[in-house]
Length: 511
Image (cartoon, rainbow, N blue to C red; front, side, top):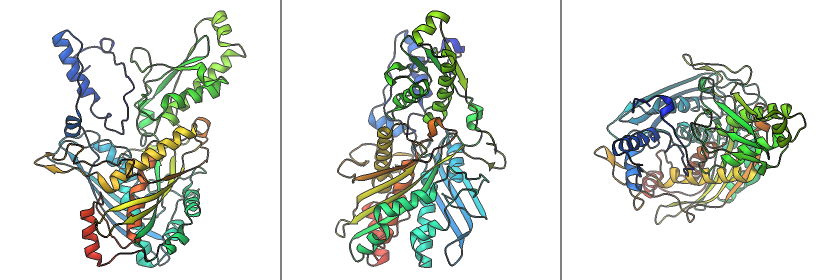
């Protein structure tokens, strides 16, 4: 509207199903739409604007490159006493979403651990490259990677079992995070850690790999669901539910980007109304027809928007008072129920001091990676991944498992393959021939384990899931490499970087 100088009622956005987003379609839609709109106004004809693969890679935002430094105070038994963490992000040429990526990054910098004395300093610098912005995890993968690699170094330096050093420091119910947020019964760090260790027989397997070219590592991590701080309150998302002859129609602005949002939201409404799922329709997002329920980002759609829709459905069910939808419409006429997001009671966050409840809740996970090192090519190949994840109650276990498998596979690229090479301010490898992404041949079997710990303020106990699976695979893989004596501190762990690490170490092999 600002670009075209038009009133709100003269601009209409109809959102189609766009395919995978992962943050890449969050930053620039208004710019692309603005260009197309200007051309359409000038030409008086419909305009379709398409970026080919190379243009998309050259022009759109990427994950923020990060330099993270840790200094840790620990007791001899591995208990954290102090954490000093410096986070530096490369924002590229323009601001974009850098401030909020940094915000989430610094809040997640301590991982799922308690420590009484914490100082986290975060900065974003501008550079002469295309701007960086949203990417699945939104700052948390960078900072939690550093924290988990540091925890492995602490365990190794002190001669402590890596599981034990995490057990003694993991957040438990009643503990507080660095922002002062109190962990409730929905905290599951210890549960996911112990299940991952049991599932993989972690300690015995590490001993069995001694002297081989295979290593085993793990990573414990968390992810805050929804917008940081008071973001959800400021957004004030709304959702509507319309009664139809056969059931109900959902009206929300959230987009299907492959995560199964349409199915999940329909399940929530159907269960709340006591109807079969095929009696619930989902309207196409259209600014002329649906309320503003906020963007499809930040692991919020199921928990936040699904929660609002559940309120709508319960209200509608009360008004139906046992009547069928057709009977109600015949007697009373149209019925549309609209509700607005309300934060859980007792949730507050001070944006100035960064104190309080940074997120309504956290999801928790532990990944275990077994890798194999090739001493000839210096390639590291994941042999098996185990992903134990707690995100409340899975509304649709099949879709949830797909999210976990997909996020874990995507993170393999972050760990081992995907490197953006900048030269003279632009991406030098903007083709899929020299920018490598994981294929099915690169992806090992992934054992997905979902632990249920219902969140009482989520729809039927659900939390957000979308970003959690990405956060842990890279540190688990790098810690497995450390088990082999390969010390990696830069991602991705390409064969060239692995060769340099092996040369520094002198020899490798599981200890």
